[in-house]
Length: 159
Image 1 (cartoon, rainbow, N blue to C red):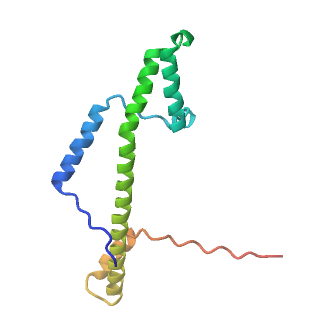
Image 2 (cartoon, helix red, strand yellow):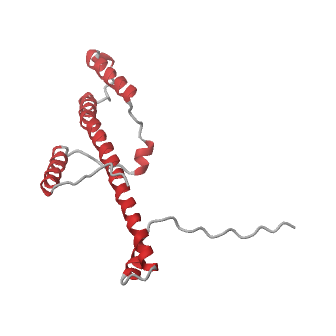
Image 3 (cartoon, one colour):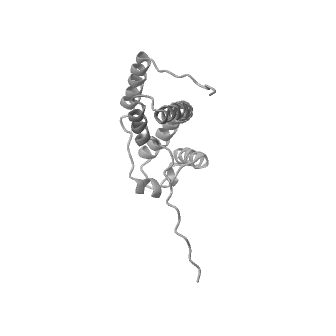
């Protein structure tokens, strides 16, 4: 087995990470969670839309005569600046989450591969009558995340 990663997080690092995450949450008190229906139905802003919104806001500021009276410019400004500020936080966090996800995938893959090697060894030891291994094997077998066996399809009768 090739070991591609050896990853351990110290207790001090865990505490520092928790503190940093809590600090992020504390410094972003206006964050919300949307319902699934809202996520599906709200208009989405990508990079092109963001450029459009920013340009529209600039034109509104430069040409106040054409801004409808029912358009709250103070809120438009807050939302435009808020989006830009959130993107500055979100982009590096997305990159961090991708690294965390990939690292978790790799460490989990290696741990599963090692567990499967051990499982096969314990299975062999149990079959060979090694004392205590039948109980260990039975416990691991009940927790084994392997593929479930499919029921064999019934024979098709053609008349």
